[in-house]
Picture 1: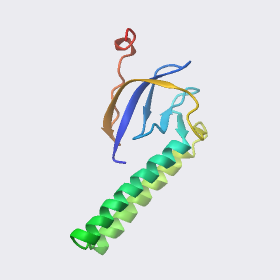
Picture 2 (picture 1 turned 90 degrees about the horizontal axis):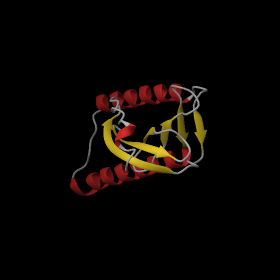
Picture 3 (picture 1 turned 90 degrees about the vertical axis):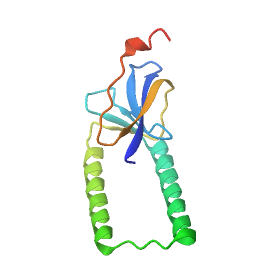
Length: 134
């Protein structure tokens, strides 16, 4: 998920928010305190399943019909180390008590605009006044 989609939305009965996820919205700013997140488990699991099935299919088809993929041991070890560090960091962030975990998003949103970003970048928040009259 190096590239992710951001959504600037206007939820029903709430303030405008930045949300994230592709193809489904699975993460949102928390409304109850700063620096908190709302994470929607069902949408996250669907996205992860879709990502893994897609990449598994692509790699399997290339390995089966194009050429056999041989990954050097040093690359395997470095990828596993990198993935473990990312999982550890995400586990620490996810275990913070101010986050809210819900099975699914239980509110409707009006999508005002969307865009794409790399996981290390922070998109500039659009100005709500640009969308007020629409």
